[in-house]
Length: 453
Image (cartoon, rainbow, N blue to C red):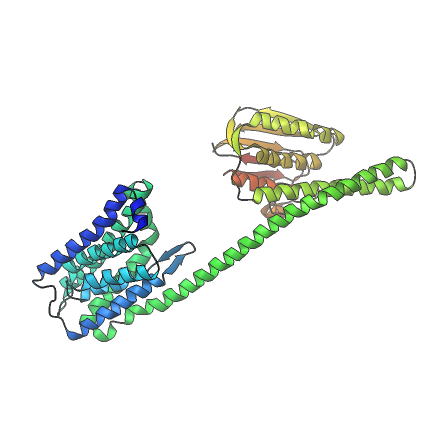
């Protein structure tokens, strides 16, 4: 007994033992119904025994991709052909032996290999009982062959899902529905191809190989999907390196930038009233702008990371009040008044720091574009899908040609570096929400965040 087998839960052990036993019983019963396990067949059919066996082994060894994260074995095709074309005592055994050999070749465990072989034996035995194609073929026989192929696919999938349901504790029907949804196009294609080849082998032998022309197409599709997967991996690596670079640069530049700003402040005090003061003031302003941009780069890199959100209950009224306190001094310097309008006291499960950063970026932009004497309003309310935070300004509005790319990175404007809105959108998207803008020339803009819940 395999050491790994002893660690399986009892229901899983029962399925691993029971399915091969069921396959053996069904195969024996089906063979017995024909009177003998080795019915007389045309000599050419015996060539299918090694042919189907080798095809199944190769299919197990080289599964093909039908999606970026999904592979499927083409072994169903030769398994169904073996069940339909070989004697009832030989076809199911050939299919099961090929699956067992293929599983061993790819180094699956013996319990898993035995289960898969037993699954194939049971499905192939039922298919052979329903639709073995004899010397002659008619419409009824063709229908029975098609039904046999369908039965093989259904039984094979139904038994294959059983261990996963027993091991995970998830409902069997749920897993079966998911597996069926993911594999039915490929499975039906293989089944139809196998039935067509089997029927044509009797009715029109010269045309029998024609359905197999789908195999080169499947191969090319598989190579294209593999190339796409490699490209996606490379792109993910580049994006990860880019985020790491932004984070590292932001941290590395912050310290010397702080030193430069300190020295500039000392120079400004020492040269107050002298000709160099204007130059120092300009340098301080540019250093401050660079400091803000680096802070936003850090925020953007953090928002891009795939680390889980640090969720907690967040009171949106308190969050907006906190942002108003933080920006009151900046707004007063610009002659802008910050006001809040809370009509719905809502608490949501969110990452407080990231959400505050998103709202703060909207407020910062609103203060920058608002003329002296204007108001910037933060409103907390209930939207159509959940809690809503709106930031409204009385600035010049946004040009229509900028709206399609407004939330993209480094879309520069007079209000800053073009990172604030990109940060806000990324944070809101990570929370499963949406952000939109309503604007009109000369009438200001309103940015609205809607969050789930």
